[in-house]
Length: 590
Image (cartoon, rainbow, N blue to C red; front, top):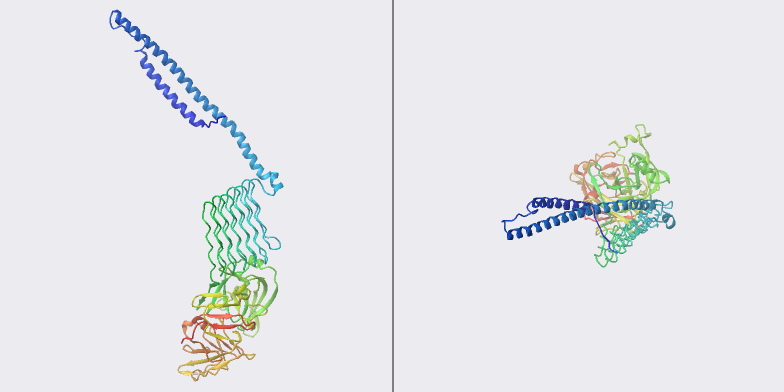
């Protein structure tokens, strides 16, 4: 059996050209008709008559042949036109059944019992996974048997729950992407590509301490899926393998903070192996200081909300956020309230808050486990009559109050009403301490990355420090300030210009200063450890901001204020438990 492929439009064009050729031939035949119809004798003799008779016979033969050629040409043109019509009719006849078949296949995709009998359609993409009531991601559905990509795996929110796996593709299609893992759990694996053609799906992101999901493999022809990114302190997932015949290996997933990158996938017979993923970066976020505030801030977010500018305060414990900075959707995402409390900052106001348990996200891939935070809904101040009165929420942004989010990172006595530093709920070794490196503009989590110069034992909230004040050529004695139930020494990044207790014996040049006064510009403050090792010396200037050191009550004790943080990096360890240790990573300078 032979098969012929014909294009009706081309046949029609050819027939038209052939017909035009026939017209040209007919014109030539007509022009030659008269000269070739009969030939007269050249003279009245027998030879001339014989020659004329011969040419006349040839002329008649030519006329007969041209008539036959014209008839054949006409028949040929009609045959070509006929073939065009026949093929066009056949094509039109075939179009109907093909359209019907196409409609039937489309209908089969939607209504075929194949989907109900096998769990997947003939044609179509797999259903995406979801997060179930227990917080576990469900796997993505498989793509259609003939054609279709796998569905994406669902994300997990529960501790220890891996992300949902991506669905497998059909004969042709790409594998679905894996879902994100919960705390300490793997990211979901990417789904395999189509049996004939298609790429593997990318792996899901691992939860904190969780490895990134494996990239899906291609089967015959296609590239492997990329490995998922690792969670905090965890490596990235390995890339999927390329198709057996043709395909590149998928790239390894990037490592989480301090984690290594995943291995690249293998190539097929033709293709290139996947690249190893990039290693994770340092466990640090941007730290910003402004003289307008005289304290440093970082960006945090809770409940999936936008970043919130938040003070980093070593002189208190626990994260509190004004309700005015959280949308109703974010409040709902925080989950049910777990308690209430109240905190007093600097004696000027009382902050009443509702407690929630939720992760705190610092960006850069750094997040805590669910930790208790406070959302304050009411703030009070003391009026002129000594009564506590409410401050309307509409006035919280007034520069007089400048009420904002505060992250207390202190320990021991700095823990406020059941709230603790959220940094202590960071995963693994990230929660053992933090480095405030204001000159470099970084807040870094984990062990001390710099060589220690001097340490302050006995905590940093209620500790013992020695202080000397110098002004206008006179110096005070170096005097210890200890915690005795009323006064104490605090290394306090939230203390603005700092405080000096009124029982401190000032130099003679400052004898007229008393409680409530600020130390004048040019005053030099030197701070030492109890063994006489100098920590830092600073001078009160306009360059250090508008908050000069204040002479306060004995109960207020001594607060460093922000001065030492401007000079160099200081590391704070949460060990020993309940006290902590402050470590100067820079030498003193005058």
